[in-house]
Length: 433
Image (tube, rainbow, N blue to C red; front, side, top):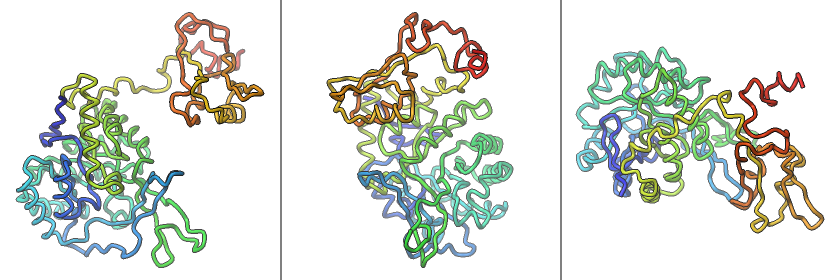
């Protein structure tokens, strides 16, 4: 059977599934329940220094986006870092780690951006026996207004500076948690690497307003008639997170920098995708908040079965497998030609493919009087829209034409175009024609 044991920057855990720093990891009771359920590791909810007290709202803290079936697609939260006393948290962390030595236990930190504050809190957490620290440079609300969180994460020079302080004043492995609220995720990752970070984790939450109450005319969640922006997470952010993980994994400047993947991981397949794009492990929050801690058992069994089917004996064989196949647009093979095909036995004649193609795409699907839908190869550009709107999985597929076959749309043989400069999709070629 596949061995799910992971060794992430020297931190061992029985599987690659960690709980992210968030409400589920705010206290000993929760973390013990998580470990009993099977989670391989936990990042304790962010601790701060003993300065001005952190006070959370005593009202709604979450906004939500749902799918048509009421499935939770995204959560927006306005909760701050832990509001529990530092000493209480440290005592609980030590207690948990003493009883679960085989699990990863990381402490998330966020303190003011000065060396003494970091030096002080690092000194105080050393004897907890935690496995490492995660620097929270990502929180986009509340703490950012105090010059912490994403206010630091958006400035590469600050990331590098604070990371150097942490590495100078602590023996613990250091993970830098990156904010997605930035134009180029590679820049903060490069800064973390220059500062000596052992790894990066991403993505933290996305700055957002999920909805507006059209009776009270205020953003939700609403506190006494007012609302504010918060941090967005959940399945809806996964595509953004995957792209940012891939950008760091394939960049020459950050290649080889260990990555902990975060952002909408709900199933074993989500985790496998993050790992294939370079993540050494994954962190989960919204899925646990939606379905409870035992969801990890499905993730473990699913990933194990997948790896067995692929003949992989360790997670190291999966990590980064897809990175060589991530490229820039101009390097895609424009000689590859596909056409949509409709399985008439599976078709339920709903007409979605026809409506979408006829109204918004290339008028490549015909409809007969008795509602039989067929693809017209001479119009199909293989955009894949019909596949995506079809409610029947596998009913419409994209089939690649073999080299030498004639493309009915262009009249040329597949493979005739030497490169991008001679391809009709090139604007200069199209203009000339």
